[in-house]
Image (cartoon, rainbow, N blue to C red; front, top):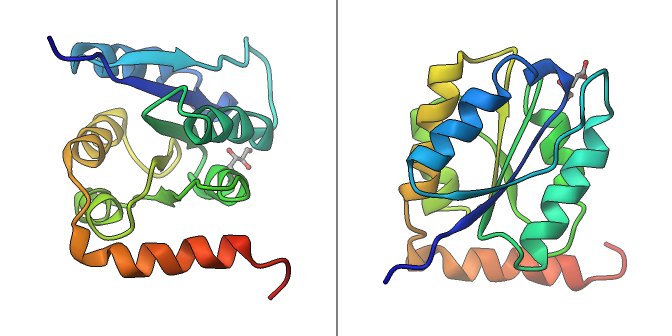
Length: 151
Ligand code: RB5
């Protein structure tokens, strides 16, 4: 029997209209969704980037999905957490490449820069694309940077 994979998920207020559609899409793909809901109103994206990043770093979730206006703020914040590689995807190619080349474990998307169907499609590509081992040396070098006290 295949284990259900859990996805840590959060958005800020810019994605309030589309967050349920995206959650349901993930469930339809067969994932369990660990949703860090901001419960209405306005919120600060770093708070939710941190929740998802911690869940991925602590192996409570297999991968993460973060959505803010552009995906950029979420990615900047999530990348502060050790062992997280969060990447913004602008199109289908970058959704594939961040998984294949960069070993990203969190995908960040923009509610103001893409339609909900583009967002869903990019998430699917990201989740279904395996990392290519030939890029391992470069990912190890990223991890080495993480270990440096100052650079
Ligand atoms: C919120 O207005 C907006 O700044 C945020 O969603 C995001 O785009 C930041 O990167």
